[in-house]
Image (cartoon, rainbow, N blue to C red; front, side, top):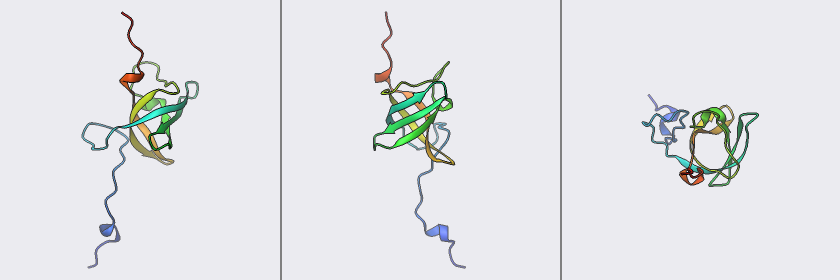
Length: 101
């Protein structure tokens, strides 16, 4: 019996929509290009210069979830019907405001 056509294809990286710690997908860096708090979504500019969609539900933050243009963030790639999207978005320490003492 001949091998199936998919048996000869190289393995592609798995894109995860949930980072549960067991997935080997590395976190990536990006800058917030724009984000609409009213609409709950925006886009990140990746290190390669691409724009990636981000939804407020994928921001790892308590309370009101929004992002500011120019903020440095980390994220993991996810996939939906439109292609690659940002999941598990966290504001980088360098972008967080200093706590007043």
